[in-house]
Image (cartoon, rainbow, N blue to C red):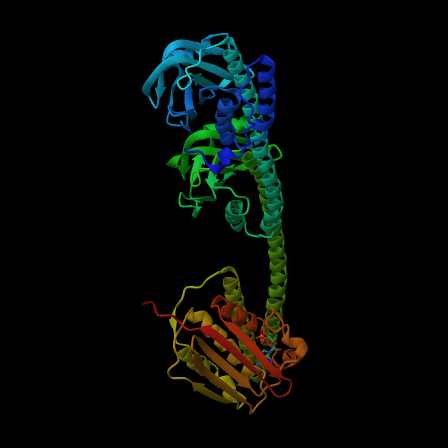
Length: 596
Ligand code: ADP
């Protein structure tokens, strides 16, 4: 390195080198003030040589730094044979290999010197003369060596020069130590500032995570936000599985920095010695400074690895891990502090969400039980009425010889049996639909279902002289669906139209398709549905006020079946009605997409 403009920023007094102890002390005093103003470590060492030569009249100077363990030295700046200060970083070695260095370490004197010694320039001997080594002390540790010789001016080694070297070495030791401490403080301040900033971020991240309902979303986002908002490099979240006494992975980060799904990763806790020990000692967090790093149990590199346990009271629910595999950033204690805080926060969020889910499931269970008992009560009622009619008719038949009346009674019995049959079919279907999340499907042509349904209902329509019209699109694309259930839905709609349309009315049916949807539309000229009834007609057991007077055998289950079937097909149902004019129901189902 050559002298940069930075290096010449110090003004140099034009005083001649000191020739007496008082003037030397004075010069040292001013020099310590000027060098003390330098903030840059490198610049301080450079100026220590320049000013030591110029102000104190020392001939050639070189400075070496000693490693913390005192084993090795490393040159910083030196003076060449022409008196030019130069970069000396290439000069390095073991203290033990250099007898002169070793002598300095072993002497109680602060300066070691040799007379008539070989003098060097870049490893080449360039002369003979005295040379000295002065220890730069900090406390009881030598962290630098200040070397001098007389190659250029050939001046003899006097007690005065030895004294100058001794005092200057001590002074530089103090200055360097001070600068290092200041720098360490600055780094600490910077880290504290960053930590404060991250604490604010942690709050924001917690708020975002607390909005997530789904536990898997929470785990996933914990990793994503931990990395993007809190600055962690690679992260992974692992949870305890109390049943197997092992851990289960959730999400992590792969060596490319992408989120990885670790939900199939399992490990018995005993196999993780580090975590086992942390759990036994109830530790919150731990750092391993230099360790093999893993991705789902597979080694992927080395670096530091930190773990924070997620405690819920006395119980650990898992742990949060981070390492520096990707960025290879140096470890700072703040990382562990932030990880611990993040782990604690996550622990609370996970425990809370789990409790909420368990509460929700219990509520759902209660609701199901409630529904079930209402259901049973309704069924009993619905079954009792026709059974009572049947029992009554049987009794009358048994006690009567009137053939005509008995025939009538048998007709009533037949219709009650039909009603019971229908009711049981509806109940079976609705309970099956209720508990199935999906249906077994195939490609179904809606037109053929509509035609079949019309055939089935034709007799009752004809009985009321109702005119049925069907405009079915011959190009209708198929839907993907469960044929039996779709048929029931269509039958229910046509049946209702017939039931709630007075004699001589008209029922129009239409099928058509647009880009991705198949439509079935059925309009009648019936009694219509009141606004009040419209909001309830899809509820189970709901029967319109007027409907009950018109159709005695209705179950109130027809439309709830239709709605559930359409829902299970990812379809939609719409209704438009006007009292006294008629009603239109329309169902929309997604077209079947042919597998390519
Ligand atoms: P149900 O027909 O057995 O009463 P549904 O669930 O099929 O039961 O229908 C619920 C109610 O919706 C009926 O009671 C009736 O009030 C009304 N409704 C359904 N379809 C029509 C229609 N096409 N015209 C008038 N009202 C209807």
